[in-house]
Image 1 (cartoon, rainbow, N blue to C red):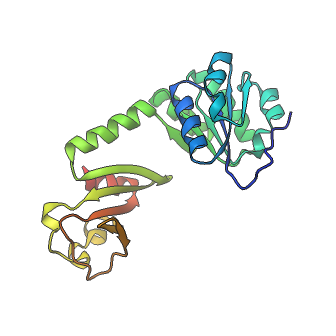
Image 2: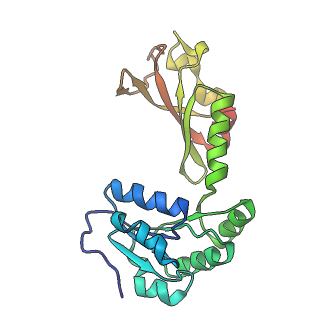
Image 3: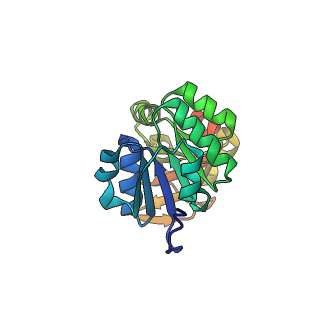
Length: 221
């Protein structure tokens, strides 16, 4: 049962585990043009997302033979959203051994995340913790609209214009030398403009900044 999809113009994603996180992931990916295969050990969960997946499969995806039948290595991305730690880790190990192109794994807590990291999973999400951190950042710094990991160890964030930036040029802010972060883009009146040295900061500007994760977080906090 090799589940290679026929339409290779779309991203092909397998979502394994259809709790709240996996279900929302399936719906969002499908709504944004991805071919999704949704997998769970419970039939009622696969039925709940049947309208948002090209294929659904009732199976234990921590079983190596199941992954082989799925042709798991043919997917562009595999999202492991299994809540229980042991089957999640076994599934992740099997996917790594089968040379899956990109693996994103949900962790139930920090311990789970550390084990996933140690076995070689680079993209790990702790939904509740990540949501809490984003909410806390918004409380501590109302100028921050969002923060995300663009690549391992590299974050980007969207911020509103801090009061002290108004009327200054990008060169005068000197964020790279002072804080180790770069202004990647300026959003002004709904338009994206390149941040030149003499660009004058206006009151309603938004900025996309990027840099090493620790530098971005220090700057925001």
